[in-house]
Length: 471
Ligand code: SF4
Ligand code: SF4
Image (cartoon, rainbow, N blue to C red; front, top):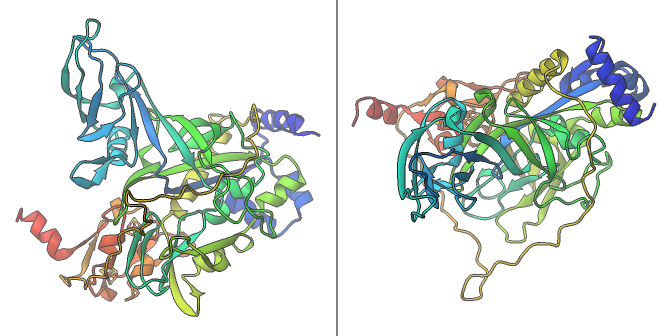
């Protein structure tokens, strides 16, 4: 049976209620008992997912015309600038766009509010023309008011992004999280063996037109993501050691599920969007089954030193080692933390399995393959005086001790980014659920988790009581 025939076969089995659909966890557990040939016989579809900060995300909105009509040239949503240079009432709101003078609030927060069904303030200006006489509009809008409201994410689900550490002497605040000096922490952001593009590393089933499950909404791959690269060195499992491939994705945001999307504030870096993306991968044959059986310990990860401009690799390890909580970097015992939520990825994969089985998520072959190409290499960025400067370095400030931390479970997405920063052992990831466990009795109120949590789930009690009393 060739690939096309297998797609037809799988869809017939789905219609007849005979299809065997597994989440990635379920499939990998089965793979410890049977070989690839038998896996291919027993399984039809495997759902894979990730739930991680993906900065290169955003939404297109068409607001529709009002009276008098206006050609929106500059606009903000809840004070966050959106790009309006797309005809009269279309805009693109990037997840990382920030409200001026308020870098803790940005496009991701507006997107989350809209997906939750909340209303936001639209403020727009135009110069006034004969066909669009309006010059200014200020109104409240919600997602049901829009003609179109869809995600267009130019770069999502990196294949194997790698991990970061800090061999310098000062704290670094990066998009991968806060990195303590002296190689004392390692940060990474991936669902590891659950992640879509490590389960189909050559993109046999993921291509242009493949259905994508984006924040609980059915969308599709529209092409290679920006910075797409197929030339990275492969590890023994045939998975690129490096960022390599990624995907450009479109999906309806009107039907998105707020459980699978969360705004994030990454300390010292800015706003990002934590978003769930999943795929239903058909088990075409034994080779595909072998790929889908990949485990955390099979996937090589390069750990780079972000204190150096050239970011040299200082450790080659694997995701099982990173998940263990510590690795040795240059002779130093480094605590590891992940800003991608494995618990969230598992929930998404389970929901996708349910959708596939009920027939509301399509399983179809791509209409075209993603290309093979390399990156032309990094652009050398120079300041106006011709020098190359590293980013701002911030000395580690002595934390203020105010009282035990207050933990808002409803804000937590179980990413685990805080765990490595808690040197008192008050924070850990529960096994096997991989949800955050907070033991308040062990908390010394050092305040480290307050800074690193992208969801502001931790606040020191003194700060909380001040807030409640309005002081
Ligand atoms: S305040 Fe410090 S000790 Fe308490 S949970 Fe946060 S990091 Fe751990
Ligand atoms: S409390 Fe910890 S696990 Fe929860 S969202 Fe914040 S950093 Fe992530």
